[in-house]
Amino acid sequence: MSGRFGHSGHVWRFAALFVVGFVVFLAARAKFIPKDFGRYGFYRAGALDDVKARPIQYAGHETCEVCHAPVVEARQGSRHDKLPCEGCHGPLAKHADAPIDVKPTKPEVPALCLRCHTKMAGKYEGFPQITPAQHYPEGPCTVCHQPHHPKIAKAK
Image (tube, rainbow, N blue to C red; front, side, top):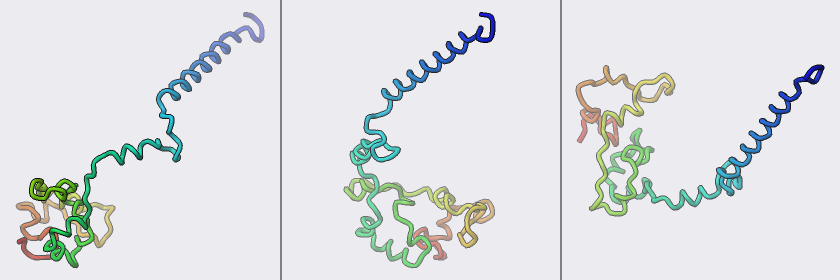
């Protein structure tokens, strides 16, 4: 263990440890990564079948409009006209399948409205933004605004 290469055993042991670690990594990778991973890029091909097997949650605004024509009329020309129904009311596929048996829950008005309309620096200038404590701290938004057409003076 003297001379120029006297301590080469330390380097060989470290190299062997590195090789063993790399082999363990390859074995773990082969065990834990699914065989169909990478067929469609950086995805697992079976994920598509998994998603297809899940129940449908959202019905789509066209489905809502069939039964709720008065709401469609109330929304005409409003700033909320382009929002999908389920954006505020949540997933409604079960309600669409059984409208008598499954009633959708009414949205929590202040929390729902403030999700979009609380004043934030990143929102563009023309977007209606409020500071809740200053705007109307005593009551819900629906005291002055009708949710489907917010420019209407009083809620119905």
